[in-house]
Image (cartoon, rainbow, N blue to C red):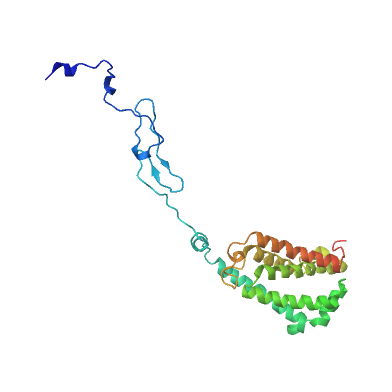
Length: 253
């Protein structure tokens, strides 16, 4: 062995003499670049834009996985409601049957009803103008709304129309009780039924008809929100407008 092999060279760089420390060259592909051991920090793997693949000194390509969630999956898996839809069906059928029977009493006088003439006289007595038109619209609207609610068809519209009828009807009952000096006993004099029915119809608007109806594929049947709030405001507002424009009496005055 030649002893001169162990003699360091004039520009000896200690242990790093035989180690190549190339600088980062942005013109070379990532796979061909080497990184310094002293001053140049080795970059972390990065995700190439548009490909979703990790690359770099450590990089084996890895694409992120996505789990799409469709409306059907969300409704079927994440929004299970047990017997709630069955309860909504029962509620709709009960309210619809009540509205239909009430409308038939007012329209044809069935089941001991007053008929159109009696309904017209009642509207006139409580101060409504155009009672002839209102009697037909009120009785026919009750029947139509009841049928739609039972079928679960256009439920927000049917429920809003029912609210437009119930609001002036309850205000008329308040005026009637006030005239008979029974306003203090309004809620215990049989009128609470109308208030309960109004709250039930408002709840149907907000909850939606459920899956068991002809509206099952519509948004308001699955996740009612803005449209249901709009229907509630529209129904109550229409009822108040009917009272102000066609009656105008102060229920409490």
